Amino acid sequence: MKSYLLATFLILNLFVPTAFASDDGQTQPRLTYGEILSPNSSSDIIATTNGTGNLKGIQCKFANGSRANVNIYVNGGSAQTLVLDPGYFPFDPYDGNFSGWIPLNVRFTSSIRVQLQKPPSSGTGWILCVVSWGLD
Image (cartoon, rainbow, N blue to C red; front, side, top):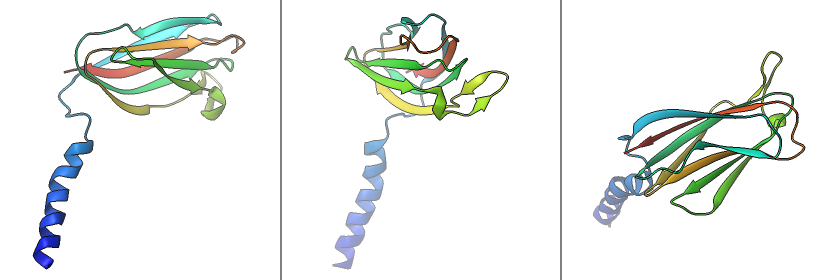
């Protein structure tokens, strides 16, 4: 019985961590940024790409209480939206609110697109976002 439990434990420790890993660390790192000023407008931070890779994370700065939506399209699918409200992030009196790095680790196999969107009535200031990503 002990040997059966030991064998099961060893097998699980060997295979379970690799089953959940979504990034093997072999991507070529890139930083891409996008800025938006006008309400009810959008801008592609990463235009649609071809190939496999990983979306590592995002950070945004908000001026004058502007809100942002970040739409992520993985493998040509529908948008997965992150709603970023500056009220949830620390305030810097010189630069507005800053989100810090938001880790994502989104794996894509055929394409990725990241769009920054400023909804209507979302403040009068600008929004600047930086995305960390890479292609294999």
